[in-house]
Image (cartoon, rainbow, N blue to C red):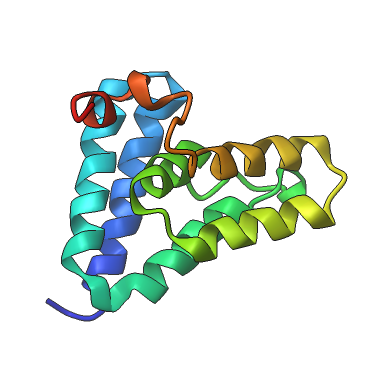
Length: 131
């Protein structure tokens, strides 16, 4: 597998997850989100690239004038499982540096995903089936 293939696959899965998320079709989105987790776990050498991609989604602002690269739920779902410190640290830094309520809501969702008692865990079969 080429060194860029895992990252290309990541972006493909993120986009595939976003489409059903936009219509609240969580079971369909979950298939792609779980595939993302499998991909990430199977390519630890690409963690830096995966982190950069998650950060791109996290740092998107409604003022950017373009749609987000993928829905925030992609970051939230994956970080609840992966618990990567760099993503949480970035979310906390954004929270400290902004007064924009829209952005604060976005980063709060990410930070809350790190809680072992995450309030949305039961809405996802992947997490609720492990309980």
